[in-house]
Amino acid sequence: MHRRVTIGSPVGLHARPAALLAEAAGKHEGRIRIAKVVEGEAGTPVDAASVLGLMSLGARHGDEVELTTDDERILTELAEMLADEHEGRPAE
Image (cartoon, rainbow, N blue to C red; front, side):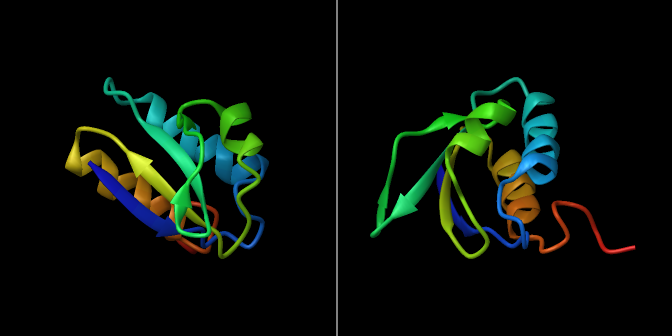
């Protein structure tokens, strides 16, 4: 399954949001991949549980990424984190 989502965090997939996403992805047993979308095409995917992999995408606020995994529930959870403008956490 694939889902595209726009990065909501003002800092993109920089250190803190990347760490939060990698932590969430690492809690699941299935393989979760993420790729930056450029001109409508998904680039080379990286492991969503890897902070360095996530940061290597260079995904900024407003960029589109594509998540791939076999579990719809996990796909939804991670897509919501990516779209959140509070770096993957609800506003306090």
